[in-house]
Length: 76
Image (cartoon, rainbow, N blue to C red):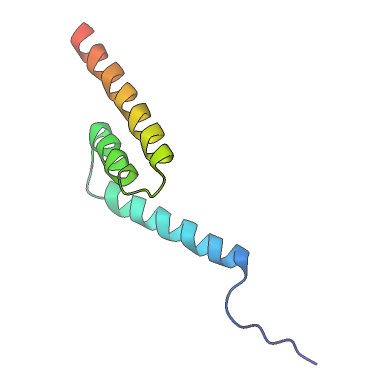
């Protein structure tokens, strides 16, 4: 007796989602974006999140990184 499988397993579904995410990142990187642009893209994506707590955490972190980078440039 053979077992028929319909659909994908949970692991296969998660793997597919991760693969799609990596393809999106690869496509963005193909544009030749700078570090500052990557940070802005992350911030814009965070603003699309349903979780307000996650949004705030990411945006605050990106802002801290950006402020630190601005100070490094000014101090040089």
